[in-house]
Image (cartoon, rainbow, N blue to C red; front, side, top):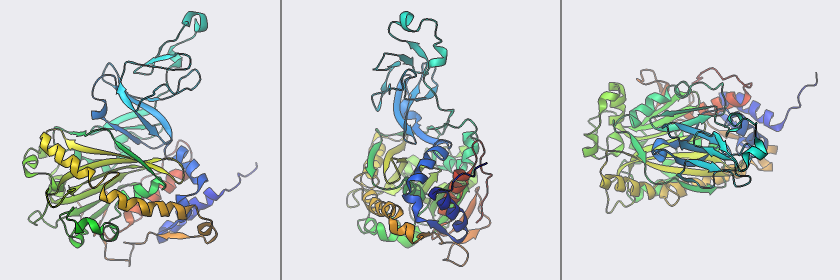
Length: 458
């Protein structure tokens, strides 16, 4: 048998797997085309990928057009109230059948030959059916569907891999942390307005690792945010908190007061009159304590779904900071380009004034024109440029992810952490990024139909 030829991608993945022990990652992961082509199949073709929030498809016939990897999928609520994720390609010639980003409809009609599908993806007819296709089965010619679709706290995920574990098992310990944000309020959350979308010349992994808990950059890249009063907690105090590897690949960070009696924002900065409506019986005492003491929660669900809850204001001179929740996707558009999809979430029982205030605060800070977003994108662009450079390849250039490893920095593992996963205090720590790339390496190297066993090496 002829042995398969080793590629540069194979070499980079080997370097990643061996280098993580020493906190090193090859720069080529952020720019190599072979790596990116593998990611589309092995990461986005297998993992659970976030697509939409249920509030975007509330009514029967509501739909949005979203992506898994680079491929279009229709997320639509059918006449029976179910949510379907349909591959946007006609079974006749593969033509795109959905021509709008969102809307409401009972059917999709292919513009090429007129094949028509209902909200479940069933083929229901075509022009001159008897003459053209009489005797052919309609049942076997519907739109293709994602292998599995599930929702958690209104967050709709799908996977193309029928062997993928159920969503809640895939989330593992991260579900516990989603509960303490999305489960605080019995009314649930909804998104405000359509998603913002903007493209930058960066690799999708830069966003995912940043939202896994890259807090070290806050005092340099985002220094101006403190200078204009957009965030109410001093930088050094903000760095006090926890990094948690909630499950393989899934990580998060909390800026947290040592006790609930400490001054400053509680419950991520939500207004006190809103906090009084929280039905905290829906979460455990430990979850409640974490939520009460939390100033900031930033998290990433592997591979590319991130969320952030924190007190923000777009105008510190006229408006006090208020709780803002943003969820976002780092949508790949090639090895060197990513489209950022950004939504703002509010609790459904917030007053119109509270919703408007949260939305405006979010737009001024975490949006395509926000202070944070403009700060972040420039460094990510240069990370990607370095990753595809000839010099990085010839010099075997490695990136340093050693913060928080034994003997490096002040962060220490917390043995009595009350939640699931592996926790470190303080936020001067990069184990959360190493957790992402350790799972990334395992998935990229896994055989089809097999899933890596959950493991931590911290």
